[in-house]
Amino acid sequence: MSGLLALLDDVAGIAKVAAASVDDVAGQAAKAGAKAAGAVIDDAAVTPKFIRGFAPARELPIVGKIALGSIRNKLLILLPAALILSYFAPWLIVPLLMLGGSYLCFEGAEKVYHLFRPHAPYADGQPRDGGDPVRLERQKVAGAIKTDFILSAEIMTIALAALPQEGQSIWTITAVLAVVAVGITVIVYGSVALIVKADDVGLWLARDGRLGATRALGRGIVAVMPGFLKILMIVGTAAMIWVGGSIIAHGLYELGWGVPYEWIKRQAEAAAAYATTAPGFVTWAVTAFFDGILGLVYGLALIPLATFVVDPLIQAVTGRKEGAAS
Image (cartoon, rainbow, N blue to C red; front, side, top):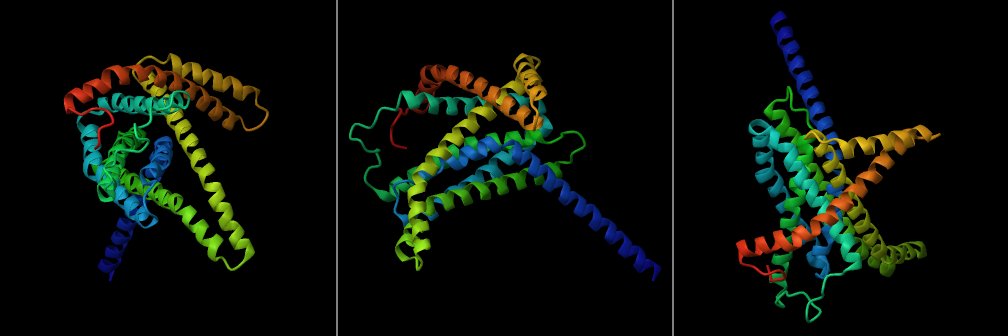
């Protein structure tokens, strides 16, 4: 009997350790995922443009294909790469994080720039899709997965940088990053699916709703969605610039040049000192504002570099011209 009680006690101890490990993984995943909020918002804001123009029956299958590609990006490529970095080249994490932050700043600043200098339209006013819907769908899915890879790399790098490296087993880091990868993918593409189908739901309610209030709700959804998508794009752009600027400021601080980071911190603390209510929110808002200014200025400075150096170099290596069909 005493042996059985000892065995049950051991089992209970193992269960407690396992439960604590699960809680630890979940807690770290939540914190790491929150750090990647800007890239997540942009991912959700960018993806619907790849689905625009397809028949309603193809929208959810396309979202599913992109989500599957995103899971492959994160779990099969980026997660192993993150583990290799963590254990063999941890000194590379900050520079890679800054590279990703530079991408976020550039993408966000480019969107702002093109508000004033729009892209030149295609010669015939239409995308070069070859007139084949199947081929166009493949191209759009492939393009979305490529874009997702870049954003997913940033998400996974931010998540890795947010994890304490001391005293962490490889299994804990793997579990946390896997939870972040799957959780963020479900959130992003679940949100995208709701967004792209919202107008169809609105049309169905407006046409087939039994109550006047239901039909009015449907008409309201249809009317609101175009504006909502514009707001989502604005929020996504602002989040890219803010998070990118924050990454650059903090990365420079980690590399030994803390002037931007410390200046922004002083402004936030000074503003909080004058705040009569919610000093914590004031600190966050002022920090985010100046991080955004830094990100925008830095991103705008990267546009000529990307236009006159990076793009021609990529075209020379790949042999492709900008605007060519994928």
